[in-house]
Length: 397
Image (cartoon, rainbow, N blue to C red; front, top):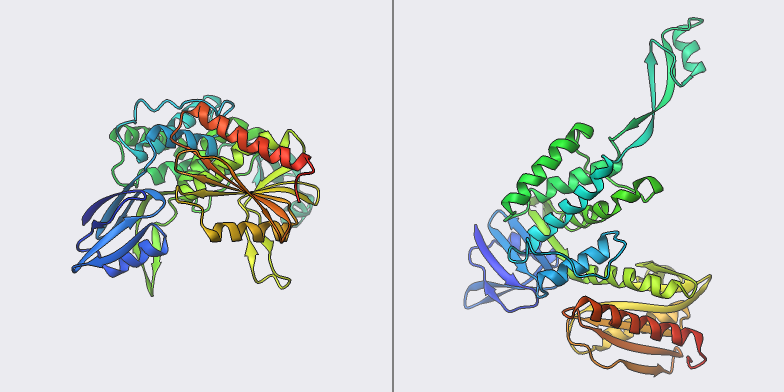
């Protein structure tokens, strides 16, 4: 097996002995680019970070952001914390890398959540019972037992920890144990956690899901992080022609992290002025519905779209197709302002353009994610303030 370590957005590195099948899978998953230079296969990371193991390749992609900054983004985007605008404590994993960071963050959230016990809920149970409990299913009682009262066909609600929430926590913990280069202490704690959870959820669930309810509020930080692990690690077997190729690991899409961060950061700043904020909605661009658009963030009130915001995890200079994409969004949604937020470089002055058709204002912002958390908060506040100002004034087209 060939070990290769790349850096997000970095240069090319040789990857000798990697099969065409594995290279095709890396391309399909949009993890790396590949080329052949002087007869040697070389790989270059795109905008995904983490580790993945194939039969002939163990690939590690280091983030260009510091671990503390990545911990902040992940916590803000996926952990349901009361105070998100704070520096995260990463003292135990600062030098160990991304995967231990994710594992320890997940374990810390689970430990805090399980102070309340495992997630539990009442579930309906129908069974034949020697005693009456709950209510008798009269039709089944008459069909099975005629005029006899016992045994009784009953239905009642029973409190159980075998819930979707517990199954999601189990699935995430089990997956973290499969990723390459897992930290030994994190591995021990994951095994301890699973020993407890498996008593409540004896059978693994491939498609475990959960939905926010008042009852699972104490568990949402852990569940949000579990969603991240499961969403970005769901390629145990990657389709490959007529067969499949085994793969395990945890790959985090930094484009998606930025989108989720921007949504969560802007929502309270915009909705306090009214309206709602939604992310990654789907709209048909043509009358036949053959072409779809997916704006990252939309602020709207009723049928009126007040602003469209798109996140771009790149420090490159603004490119034309990002602008054309925003024009399509705003034209389709009849929106008078569109904002592109570039992240990954130093903050520069905001640029604004008044567009002829559709009549709208196009703004471009930069977000310095390497800055202190207080500075990032101020940058986000400035973006939100400009959006609100434009929505409330007559300077829009």
